[in-house]
Length: 406
Image 1: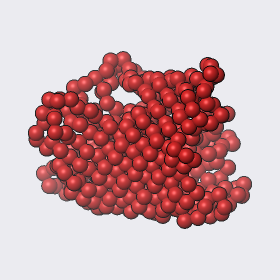
Image 2 (image 1 turned 180 degrees about the horizontal axis):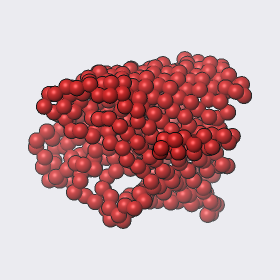
Image 3 (image 1 turned 30 degrees about the horizontal axis):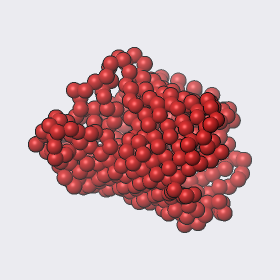
Image 4 (image 1 turned 90 degrees about the vertical axis):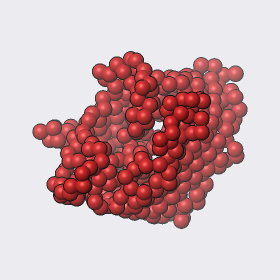
C-alpha cells in the first residue's frame, strides 16, 4: 500500500516540467569563486529539507525513515579576487529527536557513542578557499564534500548528503578540459593524549580522465578513477586492542555520455565500474579483500531520469556505500553473503527555482536476487528474492544577501 501511495505521488510530480538531476541541483555546491564579488561581505543560508522513507526487506539492512533538515547560516567574505572565506554554524535536525551523537557519520557514532548533544546536532563551520590560477583550488576547513566528490554508489551512499557531518580538513581541486581531480583528507576524529576513542581520518581521490572534450562533441567518453582510505587509531590514545585499522575502497571504470539534443530524449549515460575493498590493517571487516562489478544506464527525457543498474560482488565491504552493494549484513551482526548480485531501478525528478533554490524527488528499488547467506554459526541458507525500495523528497534553499561592499 505504501509503495502504491508513493508511486502515485511521484507520478504526479513527474507530470510537471523538469530539468537537471538531484545530485547536480540539490546536493552539489558550486566551488568556483565569483571574482565579481571581491571585497563583498554577504550573509548566506544553505539548507536541505528532506523526507526519506526506506522500506527495506531481507538481511541486508533494516528499513528506517529520515524526516528532517540541515541548515548552515554563515557569513561569506571575498577579501581578494582569488580568496573566499566562510564562517557559520551547521545544524542537523530530525523531527522528533532530542538527542544526537556528537559525530554523525557511518559507524563512527558507535565507537564514539558516549558523546552526545542535546536538542540539536550542531557544529562550527569555517572554510577558506584559495584559487591558485584558473584550474587549481585549495580548500581549508570545511570541504566541498559528499556529492561534490562524484563517487559511485557502491563507494558512497547518496543519503549521506543528508545525514553526515560536513567534511573537514584539506582539499585540492583541479579542473581542465581533459582532466578533473579532487584530492582530500577528511579529519573525522581528533584525539588528545590518553583519549579513549580513536583518531580517524579518510583520504580520498576522485578523478576523471576525459578522452575527448565534452564541450566539443555530442558523445563524451571518460575514465573515472576513485580511491577511499580510512585510517583509525593513533599513537597517543589508550586503546590497545585492534587499535590501528586501515580500510581501503577503490573503483575504476568507463563512462559514456551521449547528448542527443532531442526533446523526447536529451541524454543517455552508460557506465561500467570495477570496484574493490582491502583491509590493510585491523580486523574490522570479516574479509581481507573483495571486489565487484557495477554497471548502470541512465536515460534523461525532458529532465526526468530513468535509471537501471546491475551489481555483483565477492567479499566486498564498503566504507561509505549503500549496504546493498556489499557482502556484509548491516542488520544481522556476523552475517555475510556469498557473491550477492542485484538489479537496481530508479526514477527521479528535479527542478531549479531560480538561483539557489531546487526541488527533487526520487524512487529507488533494489531487487536482491537470491543470495546465499552465512550466519555467525556457519549455517548457510538461500534468501528469497527481496524487493526493497526508497522514496525521498528534497528541497534545497541557498539564498545569499549582500551586507556591505568594502
